[in-house]
Image 1: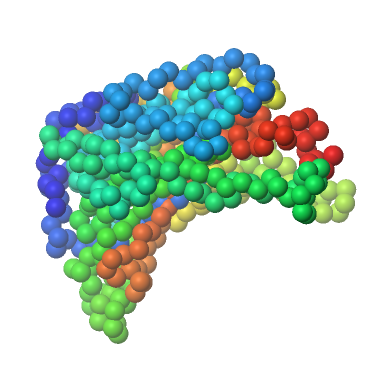
Image 2: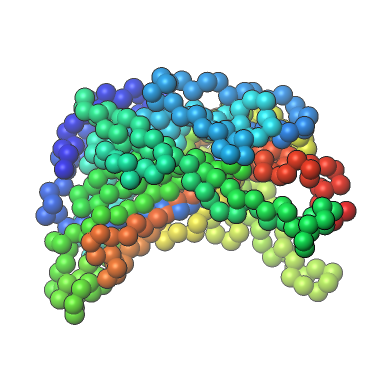
Length: 459
């Protein structure tokens, strides 16, 4: 197992890297005897503010175009999916956060140029407290997760290419870039084509998939990003490996019985994972954030319950939970789609197991004004004594001119017999869902790109 003292020569991440040469928390990997429960995975939805690109044949106001990714060819990813959608970005490994993606841009089928989506996207923290109150871990800032990349074998990256990262002068084929089918993209009826049942609008979709694996004690974290042909970005964090054998202790009566009888019990624990997102919506600053809430508004004319959705502009630092039909979107200040609507990216949170044992994990999302020292949702004072203690202290109502979006997803892991070696992957994550980025889906068949089909395919 690699030693966390190894320090990588990564170039600083614009506005989000940790000062070189300084290591926070423990300078060594946890010994194998440390108790540790199985890591969970992540599946989340969050706000994104990316500019929409016109679909084929649509006339739209000219918007800022994406510049070429600012990295060498070795660390550049450019991939065109079967439907013609193209994604482009840079990647690197950070000693703490692991995989960092930068200069992410999206060019839908039919668009003349790509537009910016994200300046950077990465993990912020992996916080793992145990139910018995005996220990908690911070896998990003305490053990420097990014210093333990795993070199992937060919079978670990099916159909793809393994790309390099360097840590402490040592090279690893640790990044997989591949393409995977994502299932149905759409399914519809159109009775004017004469086929049986009138159906021929069925299509399967594809993803560009980028991922790395890092070790943490008995666990392995899979940091994965899926970039879909319809413009959706999905962030996933998976955990696999082994339940710590040192954690099998029935004397404290904590946890779930594993194996024969009730002699061994794996202590239940929480996984709180943060992502840090710096949007580059239409390459404009400031990005605009809006919050939408839907609530019961009375009874409609038909005698049925009526609901109303309200919008609030988020102009100052704040935090919130995704309860009661609430969601957020991020938009730029320039560029509209072919229908004249502002391009944006929507955040839809998964309403995870919110952990209230620590204040900084008590909210689903935080919007903070960019500050150079605020690298993580906590522990920033290890590198700068004048920095905010944690994300709670940082969210103090300052005007949002360069917003950073922090998404927090919790998972309560109560182990089961099936989690015995090797433990199946647990997944959690989020999506950046395009909202009005294009005037129609990039997957819409060309013959349906007609005004009469905007609402009724049977006309």
